[in-house]
Structure formats: C-alpha cells, structure tokens
Amino acid sequence: MIVLGIILLIIGFVAGISILWTIGIILVAIGAVLWILGSMGRAVGGRRHYW
Image 1 (cartoon, rainbow, N blue to C red):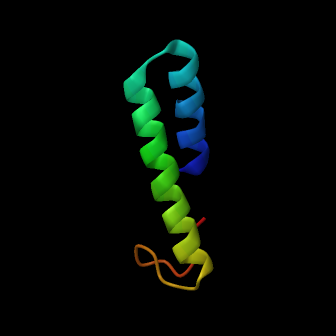
Image 2: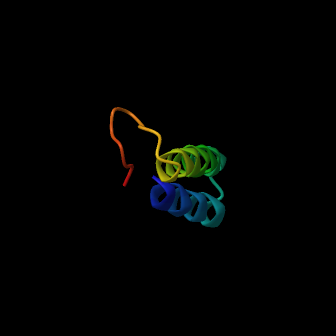
C-alpha cells in the first residue's frame, strides 16, 4: 500500500493531477499506520502480521 501511494504521488506530481496526489498521501498514511501496528504485534484485519 505504501508503494502504491508513492507511485500515485509521483504520477500526480509529474502530471499535475491533484486528486492522484491526495489519494497517494492517504494511501501512504494508511500503509504506514498498518505497518506500525503490524510491527508492534497487534492483529491487523484478523492477521497477526501485515505484509
């Protein structure tokens, strides 16, 4: 999810499309939160580890 967010950020920046930039920021933020929760040992979405 983080990688997809970064790709959308780059495409949105290069093409000048602000909606892709916004979606990219949201995906990076959600991916970071899931990654942090998964690394702390909490079950995320019914899974013990989040890949």
